[in-house]
Length: 83
Image 1: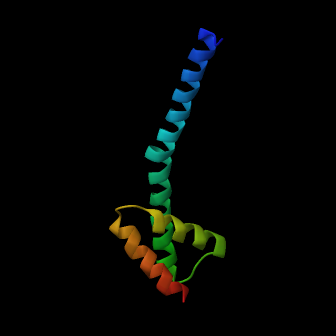
Image 2 (image 1 turned 135 degrees about the vertical axis):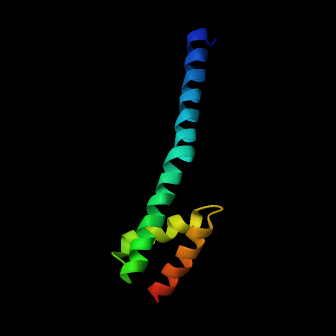
């Protein structure tokens, strides 16, 4: 038999998990996209990629940014800069 304390703890745990997921989607993801756009502008202005890992991270973030025309344009320019 399940006690009421266990049931309330489970609800609280699920609410906490939902809050963490919402925070990731509403705060962290837009900040990461903003960082990738700024980093891509710097790479394009300098005409070279800073490092392969950073370049790949920026490229991947720009590719997954939804409904952002600037991110799509910067992604194309970075791909042209690559080769």
